[in-house]
Length: 240
Ligand code: 6GU
Image (cartoon, rainbow, N blue to C red; front, side):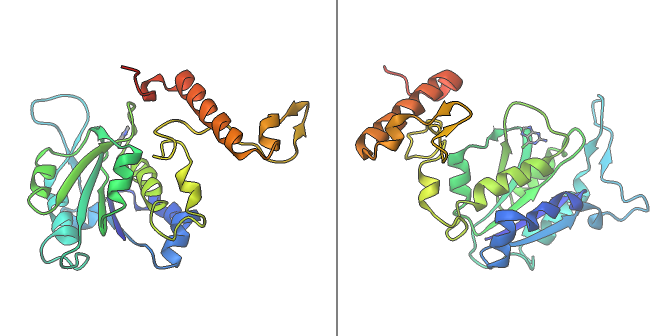
């Protein structure tokens, strides 16, 4: 998979070279490119924003640098586009569709993801409209809160997607039973324990030491349900 990021803060993407994502780059599973949006400006001030038509507070990202950046990175003559590859342009925005585990799994099937990271109050609305003439576009939100820009959201989405790629996680079975996985039927993960069996007066539940696999599985399902009812009742399948 190839990942490209368009941003006015390229330094935000230094963590790509660390941890799981960094290992995936080293092992050749991933290739990444970080592009400074200001490369695609032509004025002395390299300006990327302007005041909003219709008035209002804050600034809006101008369409022209974005148009040139998109042409260079996902346009028909782009060097980073390969014939026949599946590409999607992701625009992180608090007004997007919710980014979920399901969306992460869908995106893990693409060949090329490009993240368009906006700042200020947002990007001129003609940019996604133009981008849709070139590639599939998804405007995605992490949740109901506002970040200063798309960079941190792009990194969060990257981590969620990359860990699903074959060969990135050492033991693929560890993907199966975690929170939001299909295995747990969309429930939160049950509590986990390791040695010692007794620590600071707190004991690991006896059932987990019993070696009784069916009872352990039942206990874990019960705990996952209990935890989900408590913390995320919205995730519990309704009984009707
Ligand atoms: Cl994806 N972007 C921004 N800027 N803020 C957000 C977000 C995304 N998701 C939640 N808040």
